[in-house]
Structure formats: C-alpha cells, structure tokens
Image (cartoon, rainbow, N blue to C red):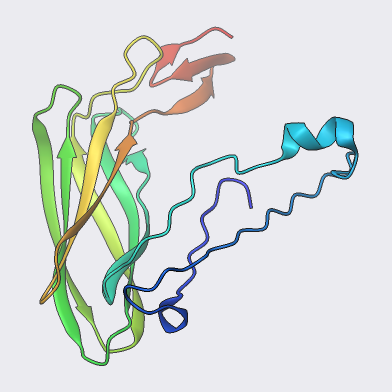
Length: 188
C-alpha cells in the first residue's frame, strides 16, 4: 500500500548467523493500465520508497502518530497530540520509559517529555502522548520552521533505540472568503 509500512516478524524463520534470502513481490493495480503492457511497465516497476530489514528488541515501539496541532484559536499554544504503540514479545513483564526531545530549527532543545511504559508479557499497548508547546514557531512557505522530534525507548535490559522525524505547526482555514495559513492570507 503506497505510503504505508509493513512489519513482518521473521524470528521463527531465521537463525542468527545464517545467510537468508528475502524476496519481495510488488503488486500494484491500476484500473486503466495493465502492467503486462511493455510500454507502461517500466514507468510503474520497482519500489517507490526505501525498504529495510532489521532486528528489533522484544520490547519496542511499533508505531507512532504525533500530529502538531493548536490548543487555542490564537495559535499561541501548540500541542503534539497522539500516541505511541508499544509491543512486548517477551515472556516477562517489562517497564521502561518513552522519552521525547523536541529540537527547534536553530538546534536548541525546545521541550523534553517522558512517559512511563508498563508492558505485561506478550502484550501490545497504546500510550497516549500530549506535549504542550508554548508559542511554537509557525510554519510558513517562506520560513518552513520544522521541529525535529526524537522518540527514544528505554526498556530495562535492552539498548535504547531512537526514531526521528520533523513536524511543523500550521493551521489552514478559509476566513472571510480568503485562504489563510496561520492567520495570514495566502494566494494560490
């Protein structure tokens, strides 16, 4: 599926140190174009995004969703409001912490936050995340201010692992018959 990720657990199919062949089949259906048509197949063939194969710890972050939204209409209070999905594949209960470091475009740390994680054996959990940002930098087309968000998982007995992505605060609306971005009129 375009724009999505697929996670497959192959632990029971491989042994550490063995050479393994991984085969990927790409299926893409288009209602007007048949991929068996030679003139069209080269334009639609291959992976459109990077693919990775890597090992993960038994307790881990499986996905995260953290949109940047505004807490009030005057755009003075921002909020990272979402969730982190966690999974414990071990036979033991696990405790840990999920830490967030939010770095401003100039490299300074704008905010830090930490959330406790308690995972029973063989379980999955959604951890709600709310991180308030006072007077966030507002994204715009001339100055696309993006914060770097680093999510680091710490579970007892495991090495920490981090994930990094960029987020910007922007609010688009039609106001008084005009398009506005963060309260400022824009032209298309």
